[in-house]
Image (cartoon, rainbow, N blue to C red; front, side, top):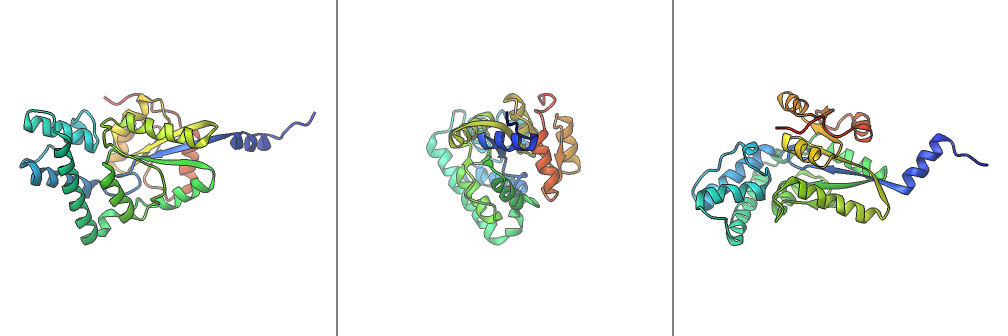
Length: 249
């Protein structure tokens, strides 16, 4: 009886299954947290005459859709209509586009991100971006940062919760694979990313440095990388990590 070597068995298993890496966008693939936050607050101020609280962790759902609905409901006294949300999206997109034209350095990719995405795709990983951003703003940030625009993109339009966005990405990956998806890993830079990964029992890799890295570890991240320049270590983490230790409070 012919028996495969362990290495051959691994290659055979990989050929029958697929691995899926799901990345957040702001702060994870693109260093756009600051400009995104500033433009969002400015857009709400311009369209509705008030500045929303910018402690995003205080909102039930830390996504553009979730924050907009919660902030506008509190200000207007009723759930905002689709027309009002669309006004805000257009203003937000206009401000981001103007910022991208005037200060493209604010839209730089996280170091090593483009190379990591290319390497994973060449290595047989399925890739998705699951972001709390609205699609119109996410596309501006992807285009300006030079990240691959061909990676499937899942956004918060009509889906305020991060779990819903992640589930949409997972369903897409499973449909594309046509076989079993043997491993699904989430990558993010914030405690709400950890919470969503924990709720879905997904392995999680944190991205951050300094106080951000400490916050991620305290929230349960088993590994945190400062960026993606150490390609080997990043891939190793994606291959071995488990779900977060506990759900952030």
